[in-house]
Length: 66
Image (cartoon, rainbow, N blue to C red; front, side, top):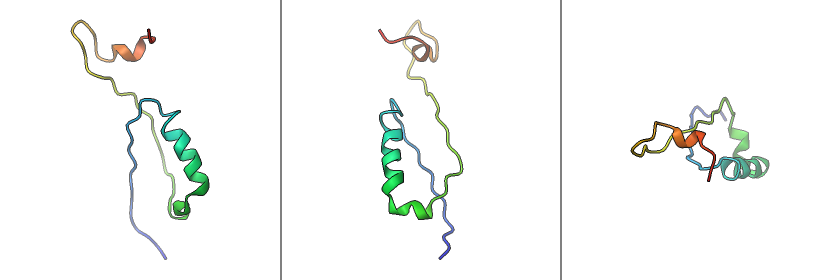
């Protein structure tokens, strides 16, 4: 049987190492839907939060946590 459909997975995570990557690793070993999926690409993007007065866009991405 041939399926002609496309899916896109988008997730917003604070820390992909403890969220998506951990869950996906477990799921990829056991999920019966693996026979229907083909991974063609991926990406990880940092999205800056809001800007407070006196800050520049993305400033908190470059600061170490207090």
